[in-house]
Image 1 (cartoon, helix red, strand yellow):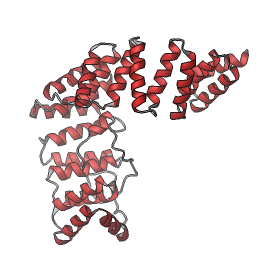
Image 2: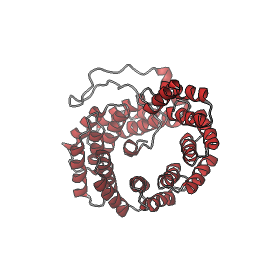
Image 3: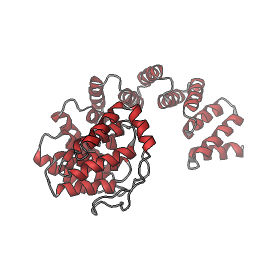
Image 4: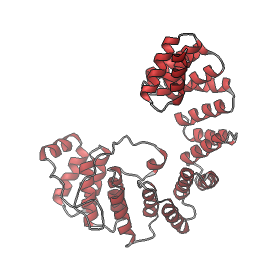
Length: 354
């Protein structure tokens, strides 16, 4: 079921690939629409219903009661959960057409449009609903996120909408959180931190706000980062991002032995963690453990063969170990992967000139 837009802001990926915009008939207020989609293939629908009894049962109920918007909405969410976005969108549209005054129908339809990379269509649906009810909190917050995620973000519009939501509910944690994200992205760290702190005051179980606070304070090399990251871990002890952020914090403040232990722990839990392996290699190179660094850069390349900096790092090690031909080859590969990697280009010029 579509549950909101937090994934848009923090990157908690849904795993669903954004696909081409589906063109459907809508109210004239929704941009990007004008013709009916191809009719779904009955064999495909029959197969889906056979494989997913929940959908099959809902289809039977819809056949018996074709004007019930709740049934279309339920089937739309079932389609969405199973990754059938084309059929999900069609059913969300049907529920919306039958009852466009129901905020759940509006949000479902709008969210599905957004998943299908039609932000303008999603916004039009929400704005149309606001003519009916300008004070729905979920609609206000979702609309704020949509305006921010446009190709040309309308940040002030987003902030204004979130402030409207907070006037209606001063304890709305999501509104503070999204304000924090918008201020963070716009470079106003102080306001971002203030809003994230208010978020956790309102909702002490708001994991994502603790993570954002941890990352912002870590960037400042402020020890408060550990407090917030540990708060995140208290809510989710398996959080890879929190453990990684703690390791990176220790690395950045120069506590290398502690950072090494954290990275090794991450790698033990996930031997394919390319980021942890790369950072560990970088630490070893920085403390002159070149052979260890070489081994870890090599492991990082195996896990992330398209990452130019892995080849560059291994090239540095090869050069230190007097393996000049290998170093040239590695710098060349790094430059092939990232033609803008000036460090590799300068190294190549230096070695080729010798």
